[in-house]
Amino acid sequence: MVNVDGLIKKIVSPLVDYPNEIQISHNESDRFMEYHLRLNEEDVGRIIGKHGHVIQTIRTVVYSVPVDGPKKARLIVDDENQ
Image (cartoon, rainbow, N blue to C red):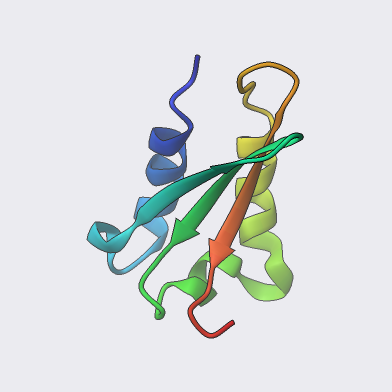
């Protein structure tokens, strides 16, 4: 099985100014294994990108990784401003 946390960190780290502040937490529901990505607030815009293109590309890679059973991976960027 692929280490999804490591994959996310490997993709996101070069894109942010504060790679030491990357945190990933998990939630599991009936249909999804959710990976919550928490970043320094200055890095959130870099990860989302113009019109969401950067985060969509990252999600495409993460969603293609198989997780346990029939569940699908879901990547959520936690924004403190929400």
